[in-house]
Length: 358
View (cartoon, one colour):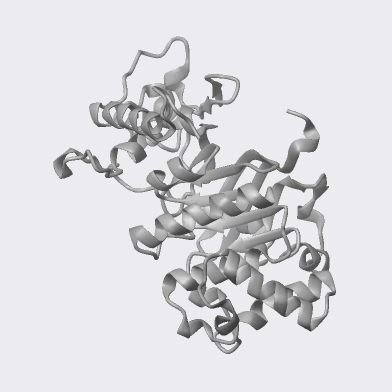
């Protein structure tokens, strides 16, 4: 892959919060890249470090108590870690857009929706008020909001939840950013609206060529939107690969746990499995493999040494000692195998092939 194709490259990123309880090591040596026009999904439980990682890209974490402890965030070849607030203001909203989980906390309740779209356009593109208004109407129409000429003069509370999220997407895409960060953008929506929003994001991405980082705790959402997946646990990426590799050939026990706890149309309720225990305290991260205490497959070495990233394929890596040549051969649980087969069949049906992929 040509280096010029990389829109974003995060290298050895370490972010901590210095609190009364001590240093919370929220992000611990994270590496990933996002290429032009692709969607990378970052998946994991609450507290895994997903949102801190992406808010660090935008430099939205409060400092103090937050602090960049190490690493770099290269956007268009420039390290954002060393950018000033003023420099970041020029990048946020123009080159990097963000959609948050709850649009009601992100949209200004006292400002008309149209004004919230035109504000960014006028700030970053220096266009006239009338042209900005015209663009705002076009954007509301593009994201599927009916009667945009009327809606442009309404306030956020006059929109439904799904429409507010569409308005947020319109605001985020107004300046045609190179990178869009979507932080749990469909969590608060019902399943039907969720599907519509995901389809809208796919369509807009194809049209505009925007790269997307999609943050979610729901692996089911990922199958429909992502090109590649990074699974996060305890502030680290513990498995990464193409969407097919993560769904058809997962290697980390934590990824197995996420797949096993995810309901789908073929699942009997009693079949679902929960991951036992809870994520570790990142004031004192555990020695060895952070997932060892919760893993039924943990070996002695897991409690002593942190595993490296083992390479499964050219695009697939997993941070587990189970991939060491001397480790015992372990099969995923039956529920996960069933899920893997189901996804393969579903993808094949959607593409009209025996083994489809996005």
